Structures are given as structure tokens and as C-alpha cells.
Image 1: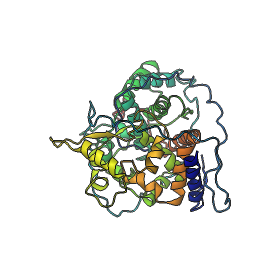
Image 2 (image 1 turned 45 degrees about the horizontal axis):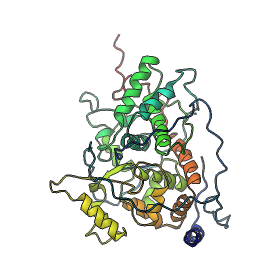
Image 3 (image 1 turned 90 degrees about the vertical axis):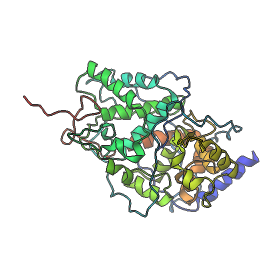
Image 4 (image 1 turned 180 degrees about the horizontal axis):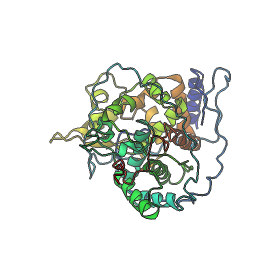
Length: 416
């Protein structure tokens, strides 16, 4: 109890260090751990989610100097578990980021767009969401983690328009987003293709790939959280026709980003600091290639604040006699669960990326980290709201998009 009170006291102090913008409504780098967890029973998609408890008052702005208030705190983290295997049975291509260079964030791209609606396909293609859900349910935990990441990587480049799914085509586009450095280790594309195939057989030309990606991100979040993260996802997106690998690095936050860069890159998508910290919780699932963090986070780096014993263990797990780019779990305690353990890992300096550790280096983000660690239910609600808000970034319409017949290719012009 004394320890919890001490942490709560720290939260209050941190909350007073700096303001946080008010809420208006992930970004993972790894592909996911391959060990599946038993899927929970899913509620009907057409009925609205249960009304959540009122959201907590997050760290105050300058006009509200009192500290945040929450319900009963979630329990402290469990005893440390043995680190999971260092290699994945199905390793994806290594992701090697270029060294950080001073660069301006991308220009703001508004999140507002055409109105999306819950139950959009109820009369257009009944059962569409259920088909996507079953495709996601059948995937292992690693692929589910990849689907959450896929949604983030889609929305942050060209908006939520399935541009990340387009494959190289020598005739039209030899360098689409999927070949960008941050996307080389994406997983879950087979699940999207399977869902699209089933939907085209049921309702040809009706359900967009962009909506399938959004539904899959929602459903994966539900299953990986044991049903605790449960929200409805509005739909009505069209598929984009533009996809460039060169757009990935300027738009996707790198693993070495500091707080200022993270805030700027999320703000460019219409997402605020609360959204950014909430979505960072997706780093409680998935795996990462060691090349994404070893240069600036592991010995002999003298800039890392990582727990020394944890860094030593990671160094051993990342060392490969063959020179292979090993993978490690992003959350060493509960690698297959989308929960708030990530925030305890941040607090204890046991996170992989400099961008994770950076959340403690600003008063407002640190206060949000402590709040998420102490009050899991409130973080779950925030995560769902941030996913929906992100799903509205740069949505395409019939005027600048299409409903693809195959998610990997734009539709061929009608030749008569």
C-alpha cells in the first residue's frame, strides 16, 4: 500500500509539471509473439458497446490545477517472468532505421473527413464485420499484434485508405509503402486478404480494404485484451490509389524519437498528447528486431537510461553467432496481452525504444504514463477512443478513392 501511495503521490507531482491538451474524441514496431491465447467470446458487432464509465479527468490544464481523480487502481505488476525466446519461428525481414537526423515533422494533415458511421455495412453487406472478426480470431497472437500495428501504419501514411497493402507493380508503382523501411516487418496481410476474399464472394465490390484493416485492428485489440478493450469502429472508408515508400519515414514515428518529435508527428495527424500516450500502449504486444533499438539503447551506449540488468539480458538475447537480426518481445512480462503492463515497463526503465523511454522526460506525458499504469480501465477506454479517432485520418471518398477488388492492387480501368 505504501508503494502505491508513493507512486500516486508521484503522479500528482507530475501532473502539476505541465498542461495536457483536452481530449477531442501505435504504434508498434514488432510483429508479435507467436504464442496464441484462448480467444474470448465476442459480442455482436451490430449492437453498440456497453456504455463506458465516465472518462477520468486527465492531468489538468492551467485552468484546472487540481490533480486527476480515478477509480480504484489496477494492481502492481506481477513478479518478473523469464524472458521469452529471442527468435521468432517466422521471422520477418529486419528493419534497419537510418540514424536520426534533424528533420521537420510532416505538414499537418487533418483527421477530419467524410462522415463515417457505426454499422455502415448492416444493410449493404450484412455480416461483413463478423466475417472479418472470424478471420482475426483464427490468427495467432503474433499476427493479431501485427494487425494492430498494420492499422497504425496505414493511417499514418496517406490516411486510413489501405495504401499500405498495395504491392509492387512494375507497370504502375514499383515502390509502394509496403517496401518502406518501417513496413518491411509488417504482418497480418494474409488475414486481410482472406477476409477480403470472403467478403467479395458474399458482397462483390462493397466492402473496402481500408475498412477491413480498421475492423481487424479493432478485433485484434479485443482478442489480445481478453475482451477488455471493446469499442465500435465506424466505417465507410474508400481505398486509396496512391502509395509511395518514400512517404513512410517522414510520417511514421521512429523508435529513436523524442517527446517533441512524437507530439509533432501525432499532431500532424490530428491526434493529441493523450491519444499518443494511449496508443503507445500497443507496445505491450508484438516483437521487435534488435536492430530497431540496439544502437542507441544497449551497451556500449552511454545515452540509454535502460535498467542495466535488463539491458544486459537484451544484449545477450540480441547477440547471434550467425549475425542474424534476432527478435525480442516488446513487453517481457505479458507479451501476448494488450494491457497496461507497458506503462509499468516505462516507469521501471525496461522498454526497448528510446521513444518509449522518452515518455518519462516530459511532465505531461509522464503524468499520463503513471495514470495508465495505475488505472487500467481508464487506459483501455482511452485506447479505444484513440483507435477510433486515428481511424478518421485522411479518409478517402468515391471522389478520390475506390473499392478495390483485390487489396494488393488498384482496380484496372474498364477497357470495354
